[in-house]
Image (cartoon, rainbow, N blue to C red; front, side, top):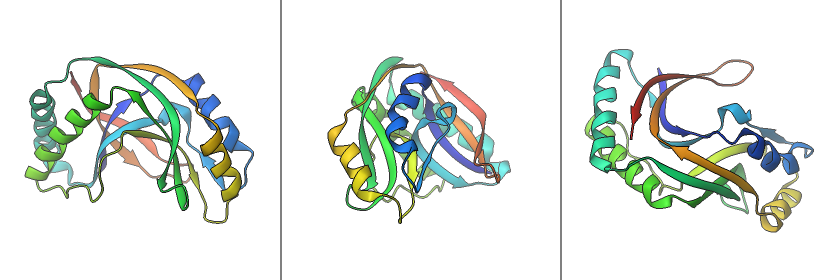
Length: 182
């Protein structure tokens, strides 16, 4: 099973508006707004027999973090790995950053204890809205990133989800495997 841990967004209309400047550009693939989420931890491939241990670890991590339900203001563009070399275009967190970091840190610790590889980069709360090919219109994308500052609304966060991702010819399909309330 290919797995990740995430927080869902419920701002579909605002996400579509944030994606709009990129849709006409060649080499850009926008993410279905219904599938946009904040990834707290990418697990990768895991044997289904280990799923109960991962579910327990996730529940314990959420308890460790001590985060209560909260509202997060979503907005502003960013890019990975950088604005000079863009593969991923994302929207970030304006308010709620502290809670995201508490959740991420607790999840990271518990999953590493299970033998999951630690992240090889620092954590930046973000929701991927588009992916860019290397031959895409980099200068135009950089202009949008620099000159626009979208407000993507507010999302109420009351749970963290363990998601299975299945690759299909039409793109990834997600299935919620386990949900832990805050």
